[in-house]
Image (cartoon, rainbow, N blue to C red):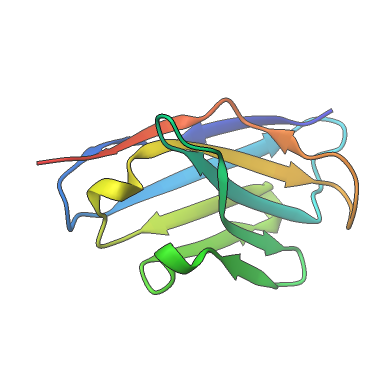
Length: 117
């Protein structure tokens, strides 16, 4: 099992920045891939960014150039640095991780990001 502790969400004005953090713990917490998905009100959850232990990254097109994902493997922690935030980035952001190339994803409880003036 893997547990996540997420932090860093909140209210920010358009154009502002936030950094999300997610620390993994548990018996299976050395994760091959870690990342973030988000779900806005009334919409489906979408993958925002992911990063493998080997350094391969993925970003959804709408955040490219604005968001940066990073991880500290020694701390089993993944970060999402978000810049130039837009109202459409408002969502609950969920951390996830997977121990292997395939298999089940483990999910955090989510942290709310609200971009509004």
